[in-house]
Amino acid sequence: MKIATSRVTSRGQISIPSEVRRRLGIVPGTTIQWESEGDTVVVRRICKHSFADVRKALFPEGPPAPHDLKDLKKGIEDYVRARHARR
Image 1 (tube, rainbow, N blue to C red):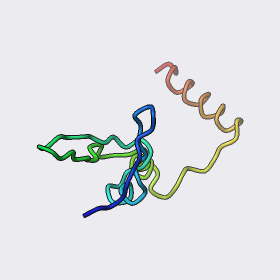
Image 2 (image 1 turned 30 degrees about the vertical axis):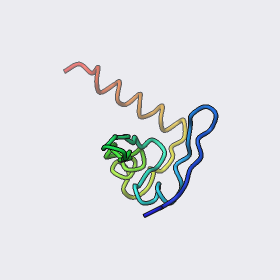
Image 3 (image 1 turned 45 degrees about the vertical axis):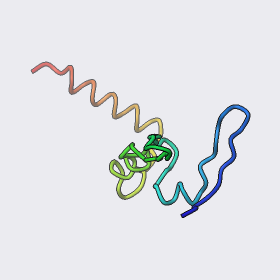
């Protein structure tokens, strides 16, 4: 069954059609593998986790609230004080 068609550029590059990207779940950063099976070439998505997957795992409710420079410096200062405090 034909899904889509691509054209090879003079540099030997192709674009992956949107329908194929959608079906395979290919997003920027995804690794794909080309395998030869007789007269057929099979393309598989081999990277199990994309950057978007990692971001969703780290920040399930969305990105954290931004902090201003003053808060960041205070956090670093508190950490250094606690780390180097005499016991």
